[in-house]
Image (tube, rainbow, N blue to C red):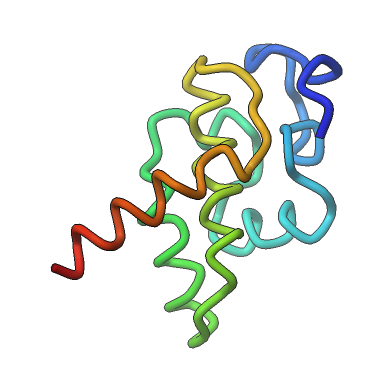
Length: 99
C-alpha cells in the first residue's frame, strides 16, 4: 500500500480505491453488504469481521480484521496507514476481551 496514492475518504468511489483493499478484500466487503466506501463510515470493524466469519462459518485470517480496521479508520478521517499498523491494537483488544 502506498498511502500517498490514496484519495481522501470523500474522493474514494470504489472499494478497491481504499488503502489495503484489492479484489479479494473488496469481495469480502461486498459479501457483508458494504458496496460503497462511504458505507464503512462509523462502522465497527470488529463487528464486520465477526459478521464475515459467521456468514461463511469460518474463521478468517486475523489480518482481514486488520484491513477492516484500516479502512474504517481511513473512512472516518484518520488517514491511510498500512494494515499491519493495526495488528498490535487488534491483538491487545482481542486479548483483553478473552481475559
